[in-house]
Image 1: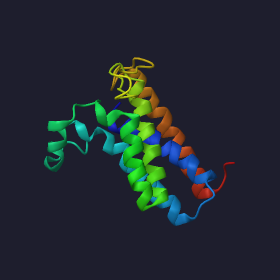
Image 2: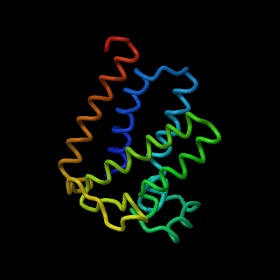
Image 3: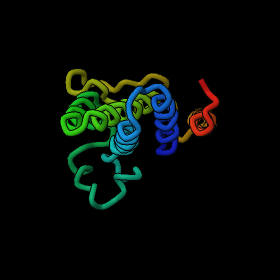
Image 4: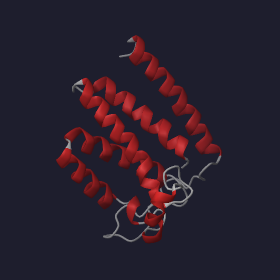
Length: 159
């Protein structure tokens, strides 16, 4: 999936979490920052990604193939656990963002090695083309839902 689809989907989930999580404002903000960081971070193994295109991240691409080890539940758990030990909300937000990214990538034809290293087979659920028509539709739907939810949060008119 493209960066923008990952972003609007993460914003959709974060808007719902914002409404229903019974935690303080600072905790919600920290959780959100790390949710969005994780959503972007997972593609650090690709020079074509927003984050991976910066020269400082190129060493990652020498050691990790795109949609390989970094696109696994094991990496999500390890990195989130490390962050959780520093700040609980950062770790939880990072885990949620990571999982959201993996979920969307599982919907593509390329899939991900979700259960690496236990199960060395790519998981593909829907076989969508990255940047294809269905992704464009998903992007627009989640963008519209985001607008509705954000307006609801700002003006307090939903749920």
